[in-house]
Length: 136
Image (cartoon, rainbow, N blue to C red; front, side, top):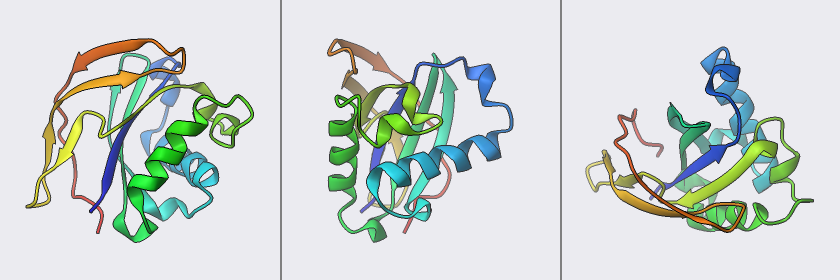
């Protein structure tokens, strides 16, 4: 099963520019941090509020939940591979499960979330995501 997460970047949403180039660059940053291939990451939605990215890690990544846990742990380490990326260097929050929840039929559902931010503060929010096809 895919492992969803929401990654929040402290950057102006307008700085994304071309969305295709942005998502490719972001997935390369995530792959570098996870020491795996970018093909295992899929950005399924973007929204403003800084830059909020809903991402899926493919089941073929081995243990996708472990990948998300590792990325989340890196958020608290200023010298981590995650915080060396072009975009992920701006990461301030990573929420496993994020605002998505995968349904057995492959759809993505909205859900409430309570996320830990890099500053250690908690922030409650709710969002709805319209996502593409899940990774297999």
